[in-house]
Amino acid sequence: MLHKLMFFFSLLVINLALADDKSPLITSQNPQFEVVNYQDAGLQLALQDQINANAHWRNLIQQKMMSISLVDMSDQDNIKYANINGDNMMYAASMPKIAVLYAAMDAIEEGDLRLTKKVQNDMWLMISKSNNAASTRMIDRVGFQRIEDLMCNPENPFYDKEGNGGLWVGKRYAAQGKRNPEPIRGLSHAATTDAVAKFYYQLATGQLINESRSAQMLKYLKNPGLHHKFVNTLDVIAPDATLYRKSGSWKNWHCDSIMVIDEARGKKYILVAMVQDTDGEQIIRSLVKPAEIALDQSGTLAPDLQKNEVIITADS
Image (cartoon, rainbow, N blue to C red; front, top):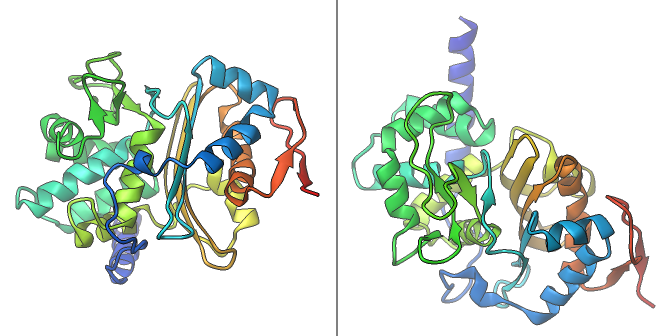
């Protein structure tokens, strides 16, 4: 009985979310597919200054154990992009479930999958709650080949077989089942922060499949059900912001991806981070404020900080 009540409650939440408007969040004129084309020198230098001020973070960056991508969308006619190790592919745990969501929406759009109540519920559980059983059911519905074909689509790639890789799902989120690892490093669940930032940007601008399907995917990412990593910090500093998010963790691998729409503070941005470190969850929590300082380009960090200590000083 309780299971049925939870099922119908989750459907109510989904249906309320999907009732929202379907216009793009960012109405930039002639938005580009590749968010890296918006590389901005000022934002790049500001982000590097913030991250390199922390000795531990700087060491992780040098060892390719930490990657960050940041997109400033506050001025929709002047999109800015910066990254550190943005094309460095790492194990990404549950974050690549966004690729399963994309594949499912593509299958629905093409008439290969029916948007039943069970499918809606599984997509919500997969994204909002990061439920592995629901994710596995969705992978079984769409298949590895469809996911791979979309990720490697030459017209809009999220994974480059001839380059540095990218976003990939090659294993069910279950103990058993065949693997379809990505061909470069043999990872089952992989991502680069560049590819994930691109995914969010295309959703925000209504470019992923089409405006309607982009809006639908955003509804599943909206108001995350787990409040750790980026969300833990944003709950405090931006309680009124609208958040779109998918994270992942396994052993020492931690990652998070978020789009923040904060009208009250005039901030609209995408932040993606991947960290391989025993303290990775806390590191990701601590990245939000330095990232926002980089966006503002109006503050500095005291040099050579230890671990996750951040000291912000105002510019003179």
